Image 1: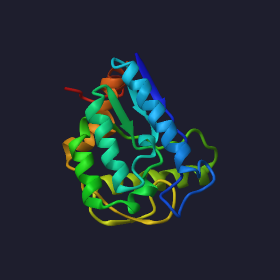
Image 2: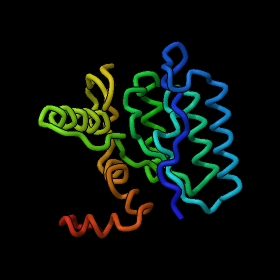
Image 3: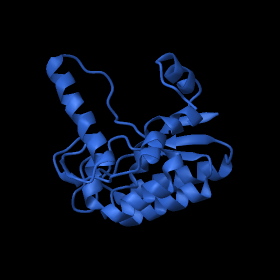
Image 4: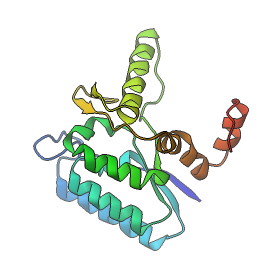
Length: 187
């Protein structure tokens, strides 16, 4: 069973830069601990933590995320809406984390539908920036959301393939068949 896209309330940034979603850090961590208890009670549950449970806003959170992934072998994370928080953490720490846990990270954006040519053009730019952040080592103006500069992570091709589609094929039934129908050669 896949418990996909498990959401924990958004702390909306690191200290002194929180928004209104969940400004109380105590409540945020109460929810994180409650989720951990669910995983302890259901060790065979395959789950994807949407937005990496917002544990990429500070370097200490990334360490906690490492612990979560090490403790729960069926746990995955996605990168949806996290790119704007990358400037708040050390690039080396974030890159090392992604390299270490590449088998358990999925690409995601947190964007549903939109209408119109202007909205489409904006989304194309958002995706392009997200790909630049993962693929190159240059400074990128803005993540998927936001306008802060983000230093690219220059991830290796095999890691990018895992994040972009190979991990999704492991987690979600039907993704591999859909990729083959689209003409991709999957080994």
